[in-house]
Image (cartoon, rainbow, N blue to C red; front, side, top):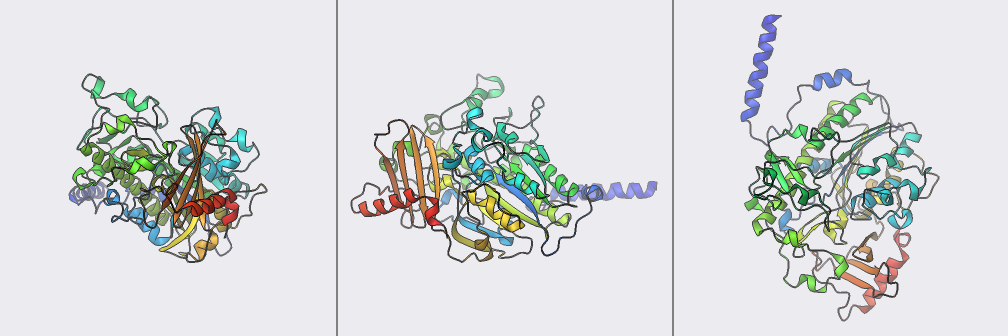
Length: 530
């Protein structure tokens, strides 16, 4: 027995040495030495035949735009060119990728409330992104309203979430069989919350939260303090293990939950916090995105002249970053996306290991997009531009149906509720939904589908309502208080102007087009159904 044990130790040491010197790309997804123990504690795997209800693995990412390999258009988006997402790309090759998917609101809480309820913000009245009573879901939608996972639970599904599915203090708005937060990096804090910055940084270029006269050389308050537009631009490349980041712990917990509950149909949701700011993660991901490989968006100097004031915000503290710092900020964002991609890879590999890949629907989505210095200095979200409202969406079916195909028809996050019920063979809820099931589009990605999507935003004293069409994006900004105030408009020809630089709303010769799009916007989502 002793000889066998020594041999095992020697083999393990040799494996560790070899793994250390393998290229990063080769050892990006190493086999886990504890897989054998995971399989031993796993529940018996149920047999899923035709007509049986599939599992659902729902993966939602925070602040993710379409800078992904499978979406990449580096010719028109040079600042997306260094995106590295091999595992999400693999998922896209195995499922249906939706080219024109849109969030109903480009901020976390309203978007997630819309997705989970199947109601648009205009129906639910949920517009706030604050962590107080005004942002709570239940007072507005009612205590008896069945949110997406609750409806699955009503029909015999085990339901669980780990990480960010609702929005911080609103995680209690959904009932789950198991509800867990991502673990915190900080010993004094049990659960992960945004704002963590370590007192060291291995990135190529430091951000402006660092200051000589402060503890650890940085201004922590500048990051956590409420400021217009969200958190300050900030990033840190750390020496931590990828598995020990908050999102790394989420991936591990999700895999354990799938193993422990594979004897029953499950709806399990993985909520990854990154690439939400601040961009903090292992240096190994930053190293894959060197600053000198980054290009900035090439914005015309006069771009902002025809954009209405409520349509976007450019902030002084963002502008104080140098060109090289802005490139590092984009590189840090891409590093966080690559980190999340590695966790998606872990989930996909675990599905195969647990023999769940042929019985599980996988949905991958973001709550909204994210700006990376477009339009002369716009960062974050909360606009109606494509970078903020358009989201990645991939659906993979267990039988491989439509694998690798691209659907160009319009879909919206509000459509996910009814779509997942159709895919799982569950009845629609007793209460009305604003979304429409796009299961027919999954079955035939080339079929004709609805002709537009809708989004909205409240901010800077205005309520913006948007119609997204194949060729045009039209937005009306109406004053929130002064009902007699001037309505401001945006109109972009996405065919000729994909970056939305030239606002045609007031340009001569577009009066009839503006009038037509106004009527379509006024008719609303009911008027564009397939």
